[in-house]
Amino acid sequence: MTRVAIIGAGLMGEDHARIVAEDLPGATLQVVCDMNRERAAAVADSCGAQDAASDPEAVIRRDDVDAVIVASPDFTHAPLSMACIAAGKRVLCEKPLSQSPAECIEVMKAEQVAGERFVMLGFMRRFDQSYVEMRQALAEGRLGRALMMHNFHRNVETPAADFTGAMAITNSAPHEFDVVRHVLDTEFTSVTALQPRRSDDRVAPVVMVLETGDGQLVTIEINNNADYGYDVRAELVGEAGSIAMNNVAYTRTDMKLAAATRYDADWRGRYREAYVRQNRAFLHFVETGRFPGIASDCWDGYCAAVVAQAGARALATGQKQPVEMMDKPEFYRGQRGVAA
Ligand code: ISE
Image (tube, rainbow, N blue to C red; front, side):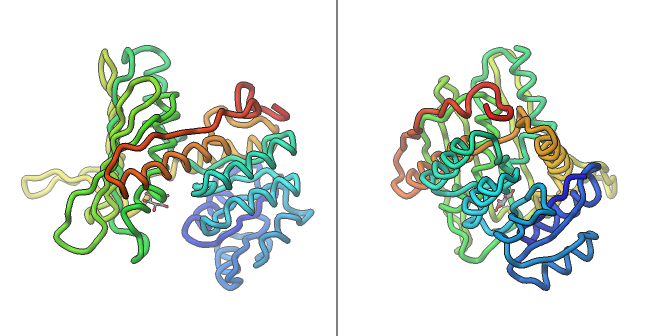
């Protein structure tokens, strides 16, 4: 049995704890850790963990912990991932690795010095069946050459009162930055970002147009105050056809001359299956040392951070911005297994 520690017992930490407890044969929920010990104890109790704790660094070092899931606030992701590398423990770190490309480079360096893969990033959309099928359609040549990918990402409302348009790009859009790079298997080269005007003072949608190194165009709309539901859409357009994501709904209600399907309130329901697949892939990584082929790693975390930074600059200046990345380290190329 792989003994898993969850760090951070907020929305995502609780979700991960439940997946480990209920959907990961081969894993046991060893400890739930949160700065707020009562919160840690409540989640540990409800998910049947062995223990609750409040010091993340001490939890990472514990002998009865084999692997770690980091779901604490964003600014702790990189330091806690480095603590896991130092302790020789594999970690599934929630997105983003860091909003700072420089900090992502620090984590990459630590991993390269350790000489093995330790960090898998929680960009769960790569495990969503819709994106899996888009990638497959391209790989099999069914769509011809990819021309465009259109993306819509809508939340009911902003997660915090001080959420800004720039945060739409640095907090929400990294999901699209990551999964589009993954589906198209290319890098972004430039980004433009604009906002329409709302009639109130809530954060308006952000619309981005990105160019890729292979001459494709990608559009991304982030609307953090869409009001009606959590709604993610995507369409991949090739020269020989197009493939679009369907709304995921298990039922339809027919009443009063109308048909209706429901939306989830947030990403946890819509991507439930993707989270389970992702966490199973993580467990397999822990058990075998082989990094899962489709998962995001520190390099992908760095790329998402670089695109987000350029996107925020594009929004602030109203000008198209180049996306400039360092060369991909040899360590993150090719065979992605142990001691690559
Ligand atoms: C949040 O952090 C997420 O990761 C969600 O998937 C995304 O929909 C939301 O906009 C972000 O704030």
